[in-house]
Length: 409
Image (cartoon, rainbow, N blue to C red; front, side, top):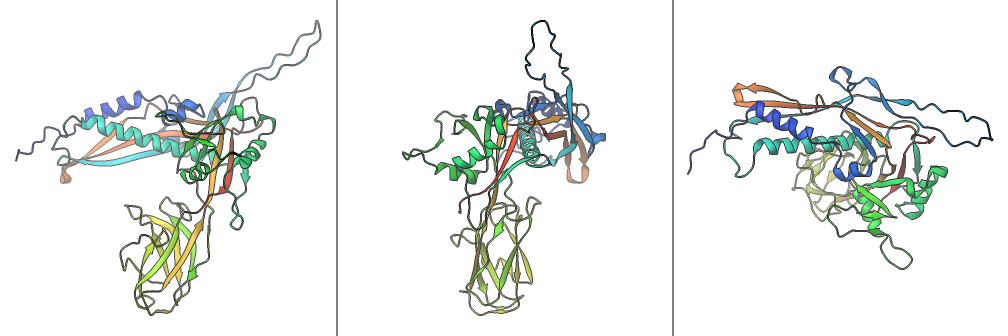
């Protein structure tokens, strides 16, 4: 066995240089496909987004309107419209990636892979995901929104062509499909769209064969992201095949929101009998096809369920209240499911701004930890994500938020 050497140890100065080089080559944080659609104005020359301004309101500028053509009679002068920079305001936020690299972990080189390039790539990819989330959060939050909410817990309404037409109608005479840059949906909504057919049975969602080309729906690119909200959803009543009464509520999930973040069809199966506090159970979120390990949970007055598909063991967003009672057999079970409220977005060009300070982006700070023979690194991204209240020359924003159901599992 070849001796272990430390020739591949990370040198902080070279690491920082590689990260800064990766950021310098990136013109927009959002993925290339989204950036090419022109929905987000992404700029790195925003000096107001700095460390001292975290949490502060800063102006997010954009060009005002030149006005409209007006009829003039012969010999009369037209009134000149003044074009100015229009201001709206957003909040400066700091995103931080904090990680530790040990000398031991970097002792054995990976053939053909530069650790500097690889870590720089991972940091840049993480910054894009962070920016995507901030942009989506900005698109769906705040006042002065255009919202079409057809969600129902009793008469579900999934996304279809009529819903798209109704959403366009919220823009009035600015609601032409020609002005729409893209439609953004959750992956679950995309599955529903794959089932849409025209009058002859042909699929409405067009899947191009060319790599890198997005699917097209009603002639518009489809952006698919599970960062789109799935919230304010309904949990059905518990169907009981056991003695103790169980009730469920939506509570804090692994992303810090409330309620489940994925469609779930829950089955709780008793695995050890006894009184409350003694009997135990396992959990399935796919209707009983797969389960957690036996005795994964111990019964209590309330039990917060863990997402079995999350390697980190994050909260599912559901808490079970268990009434006092005795489980007499391992055949006892309880079932319920989610009726999720999805958000889809109709987006025009330049509807959202993502401004960041390139002076800070890519600057890597490091602190040695002698006791661990390691170095702790931190990278910060100071930015403002903002949905414009109105587009230049238009009285309305460039985003329509559509709230609707999605089909079951």
